[in-house]
Length: 274
Image (cartoon, rainbow, N blue to C red; front, side):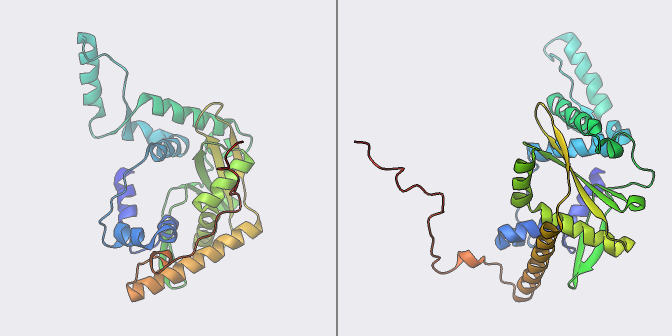
């Protein structure tokens, strides 16, 4: 999966939703990450945890062939040195995983597998489940791509696993807004419509990354999805315009920009007490 993952992300000729997120945040960052490739993003600990959860939940049979969990052993002792040497021999060519991070991922997967809806897709994968297979399509004349966590054609369903600090409705709604999840859902739904000719449902399987590892399943309403579709089209239009003009300067990065204090500002916060 590692090679396939690298190959998928290396193909920047097709636009993904995550690339659109970068364009929305900073056209310059988009330019330097995906066109000139002078910025190389490092994997964060939260991304590493998410990757482990995806692997354990969706491809458990291949986990041991791809990852090696680092054992806790005292390499200052003879026994520890022997155990470490045996581990290194067994782990050759595999991605090393910290034991605590692995346990955290296992707790997340267990929570998802105990959820009354999540268990239907974690404990035993649907017979026709398609796991992390890229879909290519065009939108507004722009070559696009996506790679859903799981697609179940017989159920016309897209499943996306999200690890989060707080899986409660209010907190996850904030994550949907902050990370563009409505746009992601719309992007994936269009991709599946293009490939399968049907309008698929999109479900988020969200799980806390710390105790008590609560999980939830969410589906965005039609209004949220409509906003996601609209935002994608605006970003694709912007992308085509910037490619044509080779102008990657953000709107706020030229001239003088007026600012106003936010609504929540308290003008008395600095008042001297008598």
